[in-house]
Image (cartoon, rainbow, N blue to C red; front, side):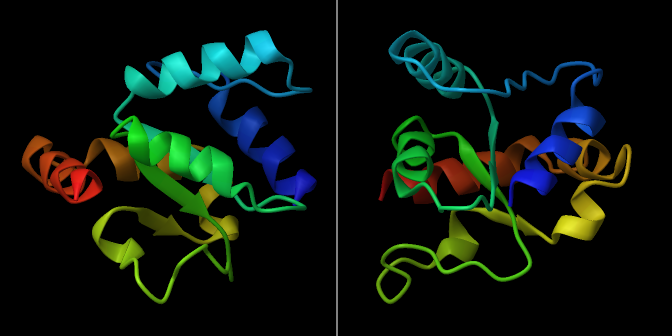
Length: 122
């Protein structure tokens, strides 16, 4: 869990147009993260030691398409929410390859991003 987060941080911290923060959360950092979600197209959701449904739902409410990095994750309310319509899934091994995740996301068309966002509103 934490190892993937560390590797993602190393791979993404120097990428252009990528905002990534790492470390302990405070009330202020949480407020800044929520603000960042509102101004972002994609929100990274790496599987951690404890899946944070709260962070996932913050992304959904912000219309920020969740990018779920996990090999096998159980998501909240899977029986009623079709996550394939509102989120992008990528396995951990591919996500931590330098350049892979960012180039994959950059290839997604504006129209497709709008489709995800329309589904997030439902």
